[in-house]
Amino acid sequence: MHKATYHENELLDMALATENRATRLRKAIEHNRLVREQSRAGNAPEPEPTPCVEEEKPKTVTVVGAESCNTFRLSSIDRIVATQSVIGPVLVVNKHATTTPLADIIAQAAAAEMELPPVVVQDGEGGEWLEITAVDAFQRPEDDNVRSKIWGKEVKLGRYSLCTDNTTPGQLLALCTLAGWPKPEVRCVFTFANGDPCEVDPASVCSVDAIRLPSERSTLVTCDDGSTSCFVREPVAVVQRMVDACKGSE
Image (cartoon, rainbow, N blue to C red; front, side, top):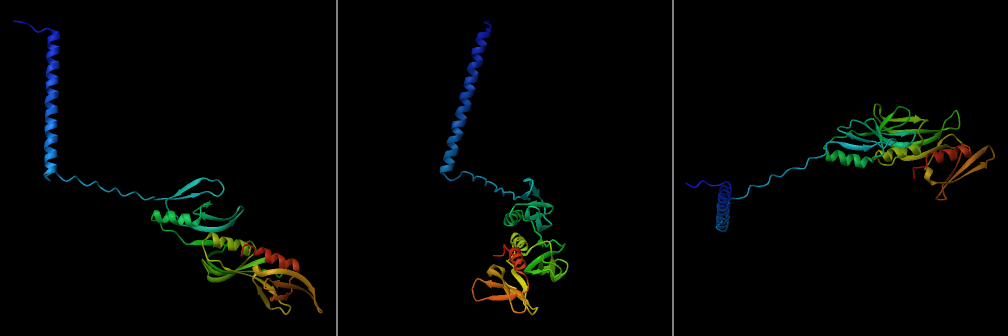
């Protein structure tokens, strides 16, 4: 009996492998033909719907540091303060002074479904305000320095008015703008010769002149409409400082 050589066995294995591949190919072709026929006949199974993966919403609010330019990702916000700092008016979110605009913070919080606290404005004297409706500039009785008087709603005291030496009317107006609040009314409160208060819109003052009246020296404050003028007790330098302290209110 002839015994197959190694080479013959190798050829036999190759022939069997080729036959197996051909068989699998014929089966695949037949399967594809049946699928096409079923599809044309309307019997093809409905494809399973692709599940809709809802895009994950951001869960943080990102703010940029005002001094360090570092980025802070906040998972919650419990305090937003507009305050005067060494670099000017800034927003402080939680404990981070930031240059990120309030509108951007609100938009990010809405996307993250995060509730925000009301913005408060600090007055430099320890007071925190939920609303400021008016700010007056006036001369301190004991010297020529300018003081600010705030009218509005204070966090602890409710509806109230409070004086501060540390923040000018113009700075308070900038803080209100930073907090997204309506512009408060800004007034210079001078003193008429008879002692009554004289309220003037600082943005309307166009000239300040020293005038000598028969009985005393006075200051003439003229407004830009040309028809409004008043004689006040405050010296020219004080009047000018009060007007300058309100700059930013235009």
